[in-house]
Length: 123
Image 1 (tube, rainbow, N blue to C red):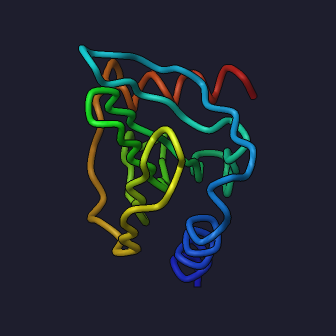
Image 2 (image 1 turned 45 degrees about the horizontal axis):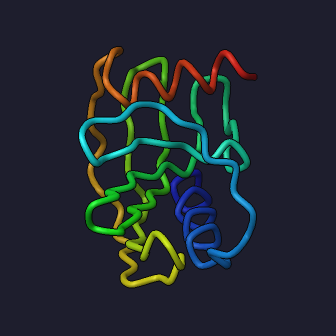
């Protein structure tokens, strides 16, 4: 039931309007790629489980890759529930993939680890 609710939340979230206001918070950058999370999307399901929308922006390609992610910060794992590829300047949706990916580990000092720390400290 819990997985169903998470998938339902991801589907509703990703099918929502991309023109809605977002509060993108900067995490890190490397060359033409920036890493962000949407502070307005952060939802704590449990004390250790967080649902959040993150974005990777590739300026040189004019693309924004938006991911709906469930993070378990106690286990240092994340799972991508869905993905959107958008034109960065217009936010037009170019591709949607609502296929959940396998759970993966993240390192504390990776972009994912930095984002988790930012979310926890801004709580």
